[in-house]
Amino acid sequence: MKVVLQNLTKIFPGRGRGSHETVAVSDLNFEIPDGELIALLGPSGCGKSTTLNLISGLQKPTDGKIFFGDDDVTDLPPENRGVGLVFQNYALYPHLSVMDNIIFPLGNLRGKEKMTKSEMKQKAHEIAKLVQIDELMDRKPGELSGGQQQRVAIARALVKMPRVLLLDEPLSNLDARLRLQTREEIKRIQRETGITTVFVTHDQDEAMSISDRIIVMREGVTQQIGGPQEVYDDPANLFVANFLGTPPINVFSASVRGGRLYIGDNDVLGIKNIPDKEVWAAIRPEGFVLDENGPLECGFGSVEVMGRDISVVSENPNAVKPTVRSIISSENRVDRSQKTVRFSLKPKKVFIFDKNTEERLRFETE
Image: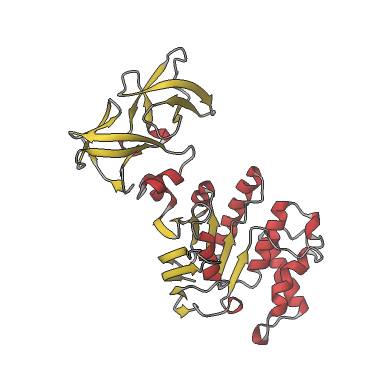
């Protein structure tokens, strides 16, 4: 089911005398193709959960429209939209078994869609097998692990085969290893069912690993839409560049002078198409090349062994953050007795942004 948001806006009125209204979502426009898994990504308060609630019908937009396929569902109540919703806290009924939790939505069906008890149980077993909990059907939620409870919540959302599946930070209550395993399962389930899915998260690793496309949001406004690798490799602005990547991108106060990029007094790269001005220069951790004659000099800090790679931790007075992290191959040998370390840079891993607007300034290398 294709989902289209047109000029979607949600404004919450101020509470109390002198308070101001809050624009949670501002003029949102995007289309989710049929069968894709889209991640809404951004920090707390960026409007991603509000967007999900607008799609589900739990909240009504201040302005704009929502379409499922060719159907305008803007004013349609949640129960008539055909959505499945999985909350962060799962919201399972503790006194019901796994079987009864899963079939609960089927008991509300009326008319031609109404099922017999045997049909409901058969459908529940089919969905439980899909999410791999078919051996837990007689247990209560309190007897399950966090990951198993999460699968029950997904099964309950899927049992009516919704037109759209909505997941609101469903992995945040799980430990790191279980999050990794479960997000792989969510992707598998989504591919097998082919249901259009919207996944809300503040975790960029989750978004990049699970989604077909990412919608990066900030203060209710879309910053960039694209495939995970595309957004990582080609950020539209400094916010997007900062938000995606582990370890985070390294940002320096820099300047362009005479077709050269300077970080402090270091002439680090020849560039074209950007006039002389003060800029932000951002370098991905993998964009550094250990080079004893390299143009960028940093104060040596330490080396962290990561197995396949190593992380060189250094300092530079022009860096926005106290430390600079450079990911290089473990085959490199770092002289730990030296007080400084030098790097050359990979041009495709260097991004330049306007100092005031923080918008991307595109350049060509010499």
